[in-house]
Amino acid sequence: MVGSVAAGSAAVLGGGPAGASAALLLARAGRDVHLFERQEGPHHKICGEFLSVEAQRDLRAMAFEPLRLGAVAIDRVRIVSGSATVEARLPLTGLGVSRLVMDEALLEAAQAAGAHLRRGEKVLSIDDCAVHTTKGRFEAETLLLATGKHDLRGARRPSAERPGRRADYLGFKMHWRISAGQEAALGNAVELVACDHGYLGLQRVAPRVMNFCALIRRDGFTGSWPALLAELARQDHIARRLDGATELFARPCTVAGLPYGQVQRPADDRAGLFRLGDQAALTAPLTGDGMAIALRSAALAAESLLAGMGPADYTRRLRREVGAQVRKAMLLHRLASLPLTARLAAGLLGFCPPLLGRMAAVTRLQTTP
Image (cartoon, rainbow, N blue to C red; front, top):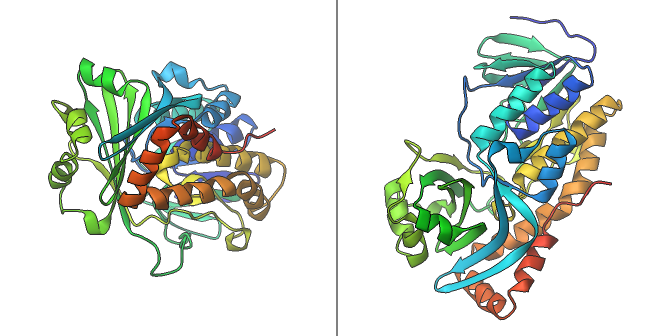
């Protein structure tokens, strides 16, 4: 299929929180929007599934209520390193919510607002304002790239760090059915657990369902998911969390080689292309701000586009909003990735647990006026 370029038309590539939200906002403003989602139906994506208060605020600004999706309140943070455990109350209550549930709800909302949802149509590449998909070629005046952690031919991201200095991480995600006792033990906390080659994030995302995410350096990966679990379960804390739990996916969601710390620069922009979400800024996972950045980028991109601004103006605005958060998150990421440093930090925080809550507040996104 070949489409002619219509004035004001937009193609949104990717149906995650950033893409679906941008499509929703543009469709509500009367724009002709085509939203491409490569998967035919609901599916899980690798993500910590934590909605910060900033993310909740941006969702509600779109008249979208996350509590209706069965979200679980997360009001505490728990740091575990070896035998040391430190817990503190979060400055504001977050939410744990399944990406499968939330993404589907946002896609339905965008379609109801008038966006043309094109499911099962995988985008292969882009050039100028042409989108090449598994079903043909489509042209639009503006492209919004929201393919998440996956790069696209014709619009690859620049590396976040100098060649040879970026640690290569593997990401894993699994949902587990847990017992009532395990649910009570995990409670309304998000847990960050240090391990020899990275760190884990655990939290509830639904009644009796625990999201288990691991970020592991490639040189610490033992070659298979069962072997990695066996290695991690040598820690008493992880062994207790997984004891008797049941995996809910046939296989874990995985991702590799991500440029953590990247924030798009205006000089890297190309005409007619707005980068959203992880394509615009890829923060360290441990701060739980990935979805907040995705939603903020969608709101800023839609607002900028409707105001007649180009990608460079939008990118400058986004960098002002998220740049500081990403820098602070990457500092914590590097510290958490060093086992000795993580143990020392947990020990020191044990003398003053409220400091942990203040640290969590420091890494939050700036609140828009």
